[in-house]
Image (cartoon, rainbow, N blue to C red; front, side):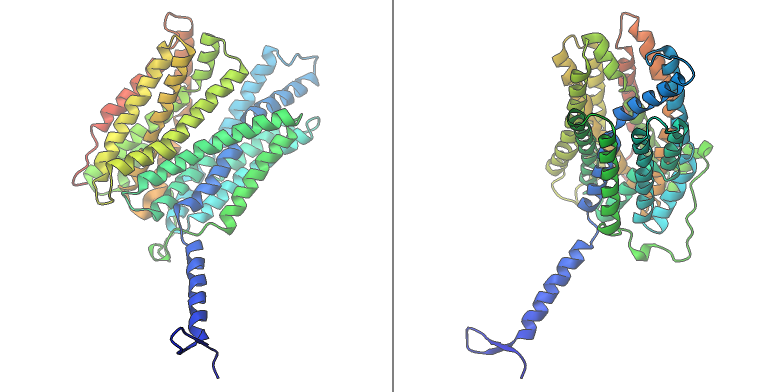
Length: 471
């Protein structure tokens, strides 16, 4: 006789029904765990961000020690001599070139793989490259007396050839595009950039904590390597694939984007609509200007040192204020604004996004003007907070870019824009450095920040070319 149970009314009921219900519940839970969702991708991205930021200062110290060691082998060199810092600058430039040049080939190809085959595969490759590259400074710190300095270039090459942070962020944004509707995408991108800021702040804090607890760099590089391994394991074992099988043609081969010298013109190939093409180019210009302005922000620390005489402790607090304000803006303020101003997903999204972009550009511009003219440290910190609040422009711009292209073009578009910004790094840095040096000895020491505000004004003018109807 089949297993039965008695109901309250005295009727007999098979136990099989209850068993099927429990199995169905377990199956539903299993399906939920394997369903692509926004939180899945935020966890490994936060861990990677923490890993990359936790040893930025330690790597510079390590390179300085290695360069000083190499020179001391040939002479009684002082580690504070101009010769040492010249050699360090050459080493930094060599590392930047070894990390940047392979991106020209790796970013287009890996982003094309993401659009045609799998979101996880290029993400795994990029984070595996970051993880492997973090082993090299760990070995250098462990065997500091004998480690060949030139092997540091190998770590940069590993990052560049596997896409580094450009592929990581581009594919992560494509993953979010797969998981969200157009109206809810801005909030998802805001959470992503909030997690990047939170990871950077946490990484800096962990590095500072380890510096106080442990004498030596090995523990710090070990922690960085551990975070990268944890991010890689989480992505590999737990994060579900977001690209549905039905959108992947079986006979499709990923084609890289246009060659680097034609990056700007290649942006027009992502849509057949003239209005959409104009929007894509306009948003790309705005995003590149924001990126360039961010490079100019590196002068804030030197400006604070010269203007207020701040030392390392206060400069660290300045950095923490910037990270905290960015996290609050991206992870809390922007989602709240979207929730209030766009109460339902049927509301017009482009109109609100355009308002948010212009408001963020204005806020950042006011912040940079404040940094240039602030007479007191309090106003200076408030200005930095305004600049950080203006960072909501980036997730909104990237969210809007994904609304103009098909799912199978998302990563390639974001990769092209990221690569374009990477190639613009040197021109931006040279110009800002020259303007900072010119302003430092003049009556306007904050001249470079007025230039940054003017560039944001240009971004505001470009935003007038964006259309929100009949795209």
